[in-house]
Length: 43
Length: 517
Image 1 (cartoon, rainbow over the protein chains, first blue to last red):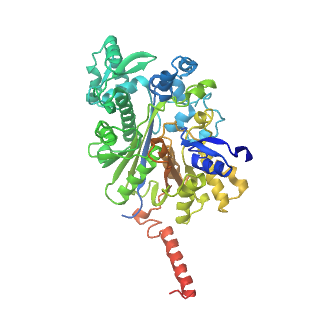
Image 2 (cartoon, helix red, strand yellow):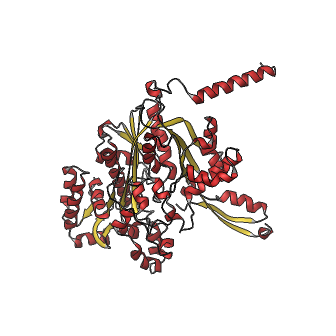
Image 3 (tube, each protein chain N blue to C red):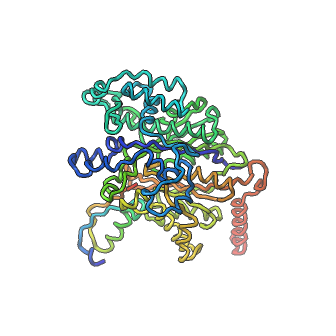
């Protein structure tokens, strides 16, 4: 996950997949800065 | 009252509205604003299906009850290039209505003279609708009042802020605004609300015709669509329920609206079941019309991949929940899953809250439920758009939790999905696919002894309203009637209660051993 260290992340989660807050928690532990995070519904 | 509320009947309807895809679906209306010369808008009309093709589409035949969910599961994917051999607009649970007749129903549902249809078009529609035997002579006579010429209709759209109604891209009618300033009563909102009301009314009438519900016996009606009606002083004031039930002739009913995004129907069934279980009402109908905004929602991907526009129908459904008749499937009001504020949004937490927690509390295992009905979106629509197979994703997550809990082996995940899941057949009309499309087939399967227990799961995306980041969902279990209302086999024996009593006795015993008395 070193690829995310020090990077800015834009997160679009999926209601029926992995929601934004879960991805957010993961990328933060990998050292990324979350600049935008939301969960969208595609159905 | 002994027993549980029962699933007395269900109806499902579609109105195929290809012109509304172009003029009222938000994917298309947004494109017309931001990119009016786009290739998508040019190509779109060539991808709209005929009424006959929409009728023959196998997922639509499953929705109205002419084919079974198992028939779709045994159909090779994709579905859009296949036809159901004995397809009919008339279904076991309802019907598929063509666009022209649906415009007539919209006018019958309009009690404020907002809908104008071109005179000859209205006369033609009246004849077709009369043949359907859905409305009274007095209701059909509303269509005789149309005196508008094509020029008058055009003037309403061009000069009076009205929304057009089109057939093959030709203007045949208009819906006027209901106020000159209030955006909540604009022509756009009035069209959306009259469409949901009309599709709701068709489903209520089909509930009477196909499920044998006596309209005068219904005490209460709950609408669970995702639209809002009201004016600038009470934007979501509501009561689509009573408005639709009035047109459908449910003269002894009152009602109200329940909202919860896509989870609305599951919440509404819980409300209905609770009202019946409490003895407040004997017969409660949960009902909803469809949504113009979602027409062609994934159209860009469908056109890009050379598919027909598959989101070309306004859906509706109605379900009657009644006091226990000793025969119909029971809704277990004591096995309820709920996504709480503290649950969070991680998928395993969500499925835990909705599936495993309520089952565990009732002493049931994941495999004790024969069929799960989560979001039953048709993968023919969602997969080409990159949204995956939504029901399958839910089944895999349920199975994964089952593996984690030691209730099934890792190698059994695929067979769990096949045996306890179903291939989605519902149109992507938001609340429509949310668990409830299975209630009709489920009732038949339970009465035929094919299915003993099923779980209905509704999920809702509350974050879309920008009031909270929370997710939502509720679930309930439907089971074969145990005869508990009539002193039958199950009378006097409540398995869950017995388990609770044994558990309490063992805890007391353990405390005694530890000297904690």
